[in-house]
Amino acid sequence: MGMDEGAIKKKAIVTQMIVVIMMKMFVADAADTNDVFSPCLDAKVQKSDGFTFGLAFSTKESFFLDQTQLSPCDRRLALSGKGAQLSVFRPKVDEISLLTINSSTFDPVMAGGFMVAFAGQKYAARSLPIMVADNTNTITSFTLVLEFQQGTLQNLYWKNFGCDACSGDSFVCLNNQDCAVPTSKCKSKGGNIECNIGIQLTFSGTDKNLNALNSWYEVGKLRQYSLYGLYSDLRDSVAGEYGKLI
Image 1 (tube, one colour):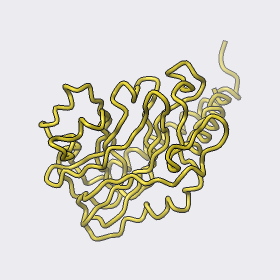
Image 2 (cartoon, rainbow, N blue to C red; image 1 turned 90 degrees about the horizontal axis):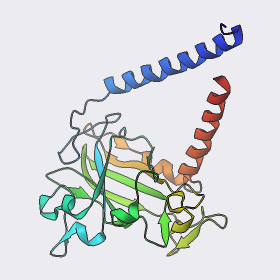
Image 3 (tube, rainbow, N blue to C red; image 1 turned 60 degrees about the vertical axis):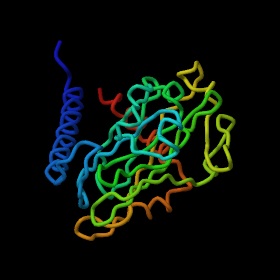
Image 4 (tube, rainbow, N blue to C red; image 1 turned 30 degrees about the vertical axis):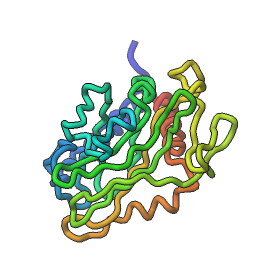
């Protein structure tokens, strides 16, 4: 039995949507002049380039050698032999991005509970270790700023906005600065809450053409909201509409 006219139109709409998305991906790739894809190599970037950096997950002590914090790229740390986990991302320079790590396939407690953001070789830029989870609580929302000078990464640092976004009985406030979910309530531990890690990524400083990178200042306007929450609502809305189409 063939499809009716309404089903054919709906299928055509979905196909058009996929084509448009693919076209946007090709345009984005064409605008990317950065051919460095390793987080352990140096890159000099401009606005709209892709920029590769990494997140390493391990114990806090694993990131130090003789009380000095080293880049996760430094082999002297021997992170691979300590059960560390690695995620690599390539966001577009000077755009606010939301990076997510699926908790159904990754357990931050088992990895050591702390994470460090890093990129580069000569400057070996790295953030301070920040706690993600322990056996009691899991922090699901972070803001990371990448600071550039003339297109070269100089620093990565975490920003905290307090616990204003904490709401309901599902969240607790840690040290008056981080919203966290009791780890026992996470789905990976048998609870009913998705404890996916969400990182709001922004940029500051200047690119290689001395253009100002301003996305960090935009976050100040959004800080009363949870970008991860907004994304989740949008994702659920789109998924619902897509379900109706098919």
